[in-house]
Length: 204
Image 1 (cartoon, rainbow, N blue to C red):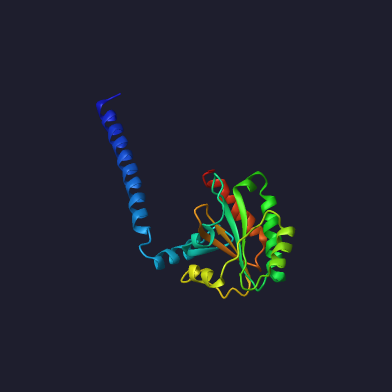
Image 2: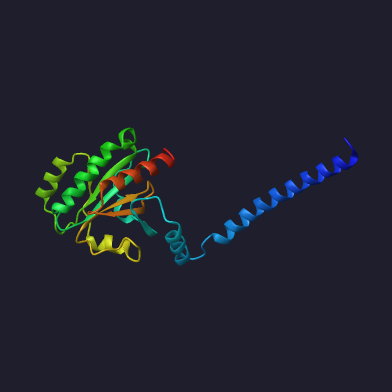
């Protein structure tokens, strides 16, 4: 092999190294430039790219600690499906609770990492109604609240609504509401989202 051929190969190798470095640093730079700096930019980017979740994103994320922190906590904090809204747990509310129970069972072995919580309005639910509801849903945690408190917690977020209908919320183990679903949505979407979240979240 001549000296000229060796030099040509060395140059080709150097070009490849420089090309790889340019690509790597170009990707890093593009990543920094694409990071949204404001909430409006983040929403615009999500609208362009789309999301894989079935539920609507709670934006900004809502801290539900004022509603949930007083509930008994096990050794390992769990993900939560929180049901709220509706007038006195009407038919729509009952349908949502039944769907949440079926979804919980369909999670199989992952069901141990999830708990269901119902937040009825203390002014509209009678004790006898709560007892009947607990008999139908023995593993449902029922925590009466004042609707005004829930409204205050959700104020200014994308999940704020008039509370006339019932909604599901997906809440992280540290009480952050991240997704919500209306009572008209198919429960299969909630099931798919829960499977995804439980699969990729730490098993604490």
